[in-house]
Image (cartoon, rainbow over all chains, first blue to last red; front, side, top):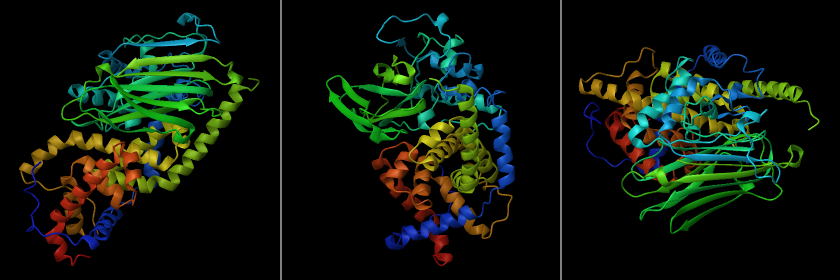
Length: 308
Length: 181
C-alpha cells in the first residue's frame, strides 16, 4: 500500500495515556460529520426488501425470507434460483450426505414424497484461490437491490441455499422424507481467513424446535493446526462445547444441553483455528449434525453432514 | 400441533416487522456511521447501511435471537464494508499513485482534520481499521470486537494496537498543529 501520500511526521512516540481518548475524539468527530438521511435510508431498506422475491411476507413460513439460507427453516426446495451462481460455486465443493429419518425408522424417504419440509445440506468450499469468485457470486442475489458490496458476515458467508440443490445447480444430494429436521451447510469463512488463521462456519437450519442436537466439526490435523476458539450466534450457554485435539484433527462439538430446546430457524456455528503459515486445505474438514425434534413435532430425528 | 400455522405466522410476521422498525429507528444512525467510518464515503455508507438492514431483515429471527442483535447487525455492516473496501482497493491504489485526493462533496466542519482522519483510516487495511473503529469509537471490548469481526481476541489486540500506532503516526504532525485537541 502506498503511503507516501500522507505526510509522515518524524517518528515520535504518541503519548500513550492520551492516545486513546484522543483517537476516540477524532473518530467521533469524523463520524459526526455524517448524518444519515433517515427517511432516505428507510426508503432504501424498504425498496430492497421489496425487491426480494415477491410474496415473501405471505410465504413467511417458507422460502420467502429464507432465500439464501432457508432462514425460516422450511420449504428449502423451490427457493428462488437467484443463487445459481453460488450453487455453481459450491459445485466445486465436496460430497455430502443428508439423511432424515422419521421416528426410529432409519429408512430414508424418497424426496418425491416430501410433502413439506425438506432437509438439504450442501458443503461448499471457498478456497482462497477462488475467493473472488465466491464473493462475486454471493453478491449476485443482492444486486437487484442496487448494492453490490456484499459478503455475508462470516456466519452467513457464501452458503448456497439448499434450493440450489433442488434446482440441480449443485452436486449436493438432497434426501429426506416428510421432515428433515436439520440441514447443515458448511462454508469456509473466506472473508476472515488469512494465511495463518481460518474459520469454518456451519449454518444450521432447523425445521422444527429440537430437544436434542449435536454438531461436530472436524478440522483435519496438520502440525501447526491449533484451535483458537469457537463461536455461535446462539446462546452458547445452551450447549456443552468441547474442542478435542486428536491425532487426526480438531473436533469441535456443540451438544445441546439436556432440557434445552433449540428453536426452529437458522443459526451459525464457527470453528476457528490457526494453521501455521500457508493455506489450510479444507478438503478433509467435515461437519456432521444430528437433531431430534421436540415431542410436539413427533420426536423425529434427522442428520446432515458434509465437507467444507 | 394443534396450532394454526397460518395464524401464528401472520402474528410472528407482524411482530417481526414491528421489532425491525424499532431496531431501525434506534440504531440506523449508529450503524450508518459505522459504515461511514469503515468506508470513508457517505454514499457508500448509506448503501452499506441499507444493505445491512436488508440482510438483517432476511434473517431477522436470527438477529433477534442473538445475544446482542446490535452486535449481530454491526457484524453485517463490517463485513459488507470489508468486502466493498477490498474490491475498491485496487482502484484506489491507482488513485494514490497519481496523488489523487479523496473526493468528498459534503461540507465538513473541519475539512482539513476530517480529510486527514479519513485518509489515515483509509490507509489501514480493512480489518485493522475495523478493530480501531470498534474498539476506540464504539468502545467495544476486545471480546466484543472479536465476536463482531469473527476473529480471535489475540488478533483484535494486535490489529488494534498496530492500527492505533499507525493512526497516531499518520496524524501526528497535523495533530500537533491542531493542538492535540
